Length: 259
Ligand code: ARG
Picture 1: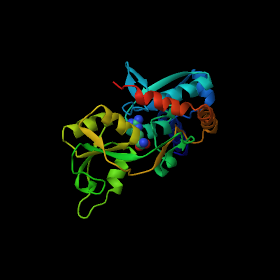
Picture 2: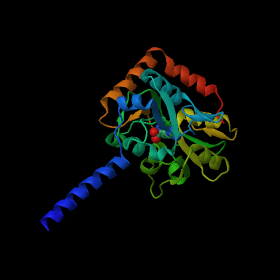
Picture 3: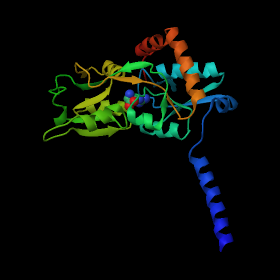
């Protein structure tokens, strides 16, 4: 019996190790160099930061990622996925970095490390031109957001009403949310400033309300306990800041047209 228990313990331990290896892996600079590629995770309906142009991911974040890959001497691979899955996927090592106009939040800092902040943003409100929606009556409205974003968190947690709270509709991406806004299925969309400007630019029926709901900063998500990768990312960012490249990328992609 004792022997059986021992064997069982060993089998269980091996099984747990195999399972842990299967659902998470530890990223590192050596591993990336050995693989010859840097894999980044993003969600590409967020122009100018990431969008699809000519069938390929493009944008400020893609340019930043390309510079990190260049400094590491490896190829860049971009994986386009649901935004709400990015934090968990970076945590489990399903990609090396999350670069997705991602706001640094206290909750995300429990799961991940973040690089230096590279862009300041805010949540704003897009409405149909001439609507009666204001920053103060959002609690009585139907609000569209991209699921798992800080716009979602604001709409869900911070719009308090007595007796109402906003009716929040969560979408996989901001493009569908804004189509529903144009079609009158939601009253407002809460989203980041530059992506909001980009949406309004291509839809004459929509406008952005004056004023902002939040102040936020974007940074690159790195798996915890990976100081060398975090350092490498920050080093490239420092070079890009010094060369004025981030502003250049923002300008370039704000005038480019997403498809
Ligand atoms: N800044 C917001 C957040 O971190 C929205 C980011 C959405 N990014 C994207 N690529 N769709 O939650």
